[in-house]
Length: 342
Image (cartoon, rainbow, N blue to C red; front, side, top):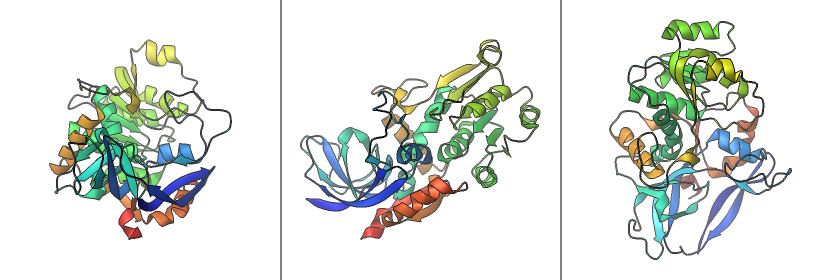
C-alpha cells in the first residue's frame, strides 16, 4: 500500500491537500510516482468554482455542483508498479501521462502513458498533454505554411498555440489578450505581434497586418464577445477552431453575416472529439499527438520548459489556487513538484 498526498477541490473555491492511499494496480493498470503535474487554468478554474459544464458528453448532474472535484490532467513521472497483463511498461520507466491528477501516485490505464526518452525532462513532459489541445486545433484548421493566424486568449493553451503555430509555419502570428503581461509573454514565446482586443481599432490593426484578414484563428477564450471579434478579423472562407470551452452563454453572433455569407468554417476543437484509435489527417489520437509533441520538444522545434513561470510544493496548493482565482495576472505555466514532499 502506497501513501501520499492529493490536491482536492473540496468545495467551491476551496483546494485542500489530503492524505490518500494507493492499492495494488489492477489488470492493465500502471502506478506512476509523479515528478511534476501542470495546472491547466481554464479546466481547473471551472472545476474549483463549481461550473456545471465540465463534462462534454455528460448532462449536468444538478443545479448544485457536486464535490469533491479534482484538477490536473497533464503529468510525468516514474513507473513504480504494474498490473497483470501490462507489457509495454516496467518499473523504473520514465513516462508522461494523460488524464491523471495532482497526486503523489497516480493510477493510469496502460493505454494512457507514453515512455519518455532520457533527454526529455519531467517538467517539460508534464506539459505535453496540455500541448496536445492546441495542436489538435491547428490540425483541424488545416493550416498551411505562410498563412496568417490569430490566437484569441493567451492562457496556457493560447501560448502553446503560438509556439505550435510558429513550428507549423504560420506568419504572422497575432496573439490577442487584454492583459499586458500575457501579450508580452506571447511575444517571448514566438508571436510576431501582440494586440489588445479592447483597442478601438483592433480589427483595423489585424487587417493591416494580414491584408484582408487572417486565414486561420484559434479561439481559446470560450467567450462570446471574443468569438465575435475573431469573426471580424478572419477573411472570407477563413477557418476558426473553437478551442476554448464555451461554458458561458453570452453568444449573440450574427451568423448570417459573419459565418454563413463569407463561408467561414467554425470547427469544434474539443479534445474529446479525437479518435480512440487510428489517426487520420486533422484528427490524431492522443497517443500520436503526445508522440508528436515530445518529438518537437526533443528536436528543438519548441521548448515546453520556457513557459514554466512558477514551481510549487503541492502543500502550497491552497494558496496557489487562491491566487489563480483572484489575480488577473496569475502566471501562465504553474507546476507542482512532487519531489518537494520527500
